[in-house]
Image (cartoon, rainbow, N blue to C red):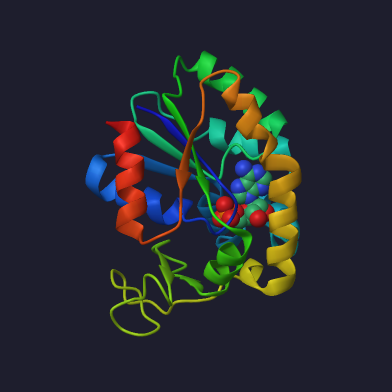
Length: 210
Ligand code: AMP
């Protein structure tokens, strides 16, 4: 089963994806995580992407599509987290899925009030190596400032600073939100209320998947 998780930055796509990976056997394909890894390794792609990411802007579509194409394995069950993000990506993705004889079974859009999104993003901390995501308010680590799994120091993402947050939310409204209509016309979109605690949101998603 392949699932696309749509929703603005900060609604909890990554957090829910982590749970679905641990409990339900999915593989998370987060273009944001892949890009951050490329940046950390100083690759050619990483250097190109960093310029956009630091400002909170979207990375060009051709770079993203090629990156996803190089990762997809038809036998896996994917959660697409943060991809596709534009209509061009969605169309390129449709083609890629046809080539690989894969299909999307569910498109889930996580919805949350703007103020709550900003609050969550400001409190978000990540473990750069393990990729785990924490929230100082709703999902704190067991030991302050340290990843539960790897023990590494948690950091604030540079694009979780207020200026970049605003740009990212605008990018979402202008370029990504139209995908809801795009998928509404084909696969259909299930809207999930992303407020409340992590387990509640997880159950809402599980109800759709089972
Ligand atoms: P995320 O971790 O999903 O919030 O992504 C962090 C940043 O990586 C975004 O603000 C973009 O700069 C870039 N990015 C991630 N996924 C995509 C994508 N599908 N298309 C374009 N840019 C992306």
